Image (cartoon, rainbow, N blue to C red; front, side, top):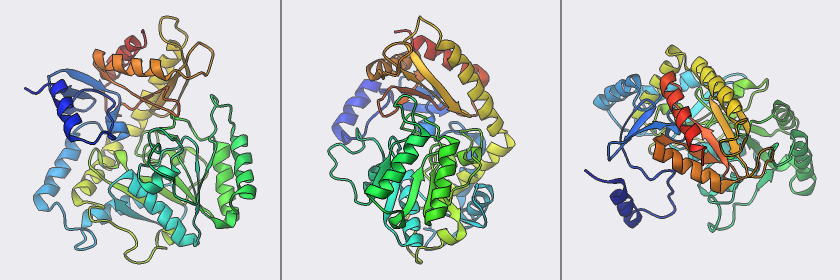
Length: 425
């Protein structure tokens, strides 16, 4: 039997240092919201592969769809010999996405690819280069997407200068003292000081920031961005890589708003653990690039497309949107009670949309002063207790909860109790 420590030693010898780990355990098997390491120890999974497993580990219907596809063919390249699962998935996504008018889709492999292609599409449609993103936002680790990402460590430090033509505006945050009005003022100033709106191809925003700390975009900001984009011919891109497919209690998080984007990026829970991403948007915008301007060797892999079709069926038939709202209500209620206790580390700013829930660990009660050191100690203790727990945020002091939406209530309760113990340092 291999041991975690032995595998970690081999990892350090064989794998590049820049790839980090949230835990020190090595997975052996997993089922729904539970995972067992190579030493046979059980863990409750409140990470879900970083929001990839809304339908849980190895959902039987997803696995069955994958096995059927494996028996037929695994790869032809859609650009060489196309196949029906890609088209069927596009039809489903086009019908579900909150896009005005006819929609079209393109499928890729990673979230960063989805974002890069959304920017390419916007540039082709507008004939402009500039892109505006928000501080704290996370859009990927490639050259362009790391430029869009609004956090330096670890995504930019020591990796060279960012690509030109990318601008950032402060994102609203109570802890930072930034309001939606402040963000709009800075955007207006950006248009005066750095780039004319006529040179901007796209504004990209997460409905709920993921790595940035599960900060929810205020409705008034989303409405104002929609109006600005309409006024200046700018493409509004909603990055739903982390928020999509039921996590916020809606199929897409943008359904929580009364305005719609032009393009939406997708990945993570789209295919239940299989690598698949995509862009869906207004048909005329999606059709802007020349033939051959979009695609990729593995993009829209048939096995992943089959998995995604099964994921969409599971979300519908097992009522996972309702489950997300129930799970979120449980966490919000219990965390609000927890925040009043004096026998745990100070926590604040309990927040969430659907089952995308987070809270901050701070230096003292009643403050917003981040405490990243204590946050790391909490996630480490959680692992020791048998709970996989992730942190995030610009200051590294946010605990985020991403349990599968299929998790039984008993497992959610057990995991919450373990987290409570971890908060007792």
